[in-house]
Length: 129
Image 1 (cartoon, rainbow, N blue to C red):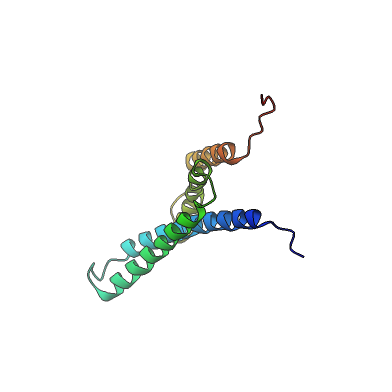
Image 2: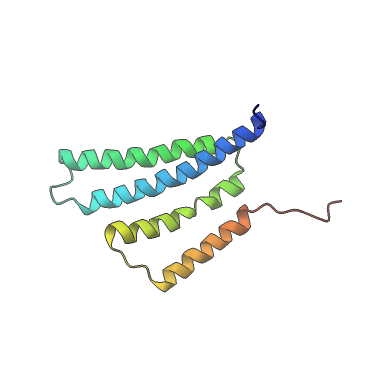
């Protein structure tokens, strides 16, 4: 027997779409950076256009998932969660492009992540009237 209500199932799917959107956004950005970093053969060549189309399609899949997520997820929660992109981009830039991760960047991303947690965590109002 399925113990999940249709509402909780829809909420789960919406949050899954939100995090999928974030993932596609990160990968799309990294692919755009990769594409633009390898333009030695020219901007209007077939290999360049193929790479760019893949990057833009990936990023667009993130937008489609974002739209589905907004069906249920409050915008005041969904939008701050997209700042998790900063973490993914920071790590992806380090891993794929050899960009340096400085202490100040780590502190900045940690502050952003802490802020996201403060915004996204449910707040209970114990003094409801």
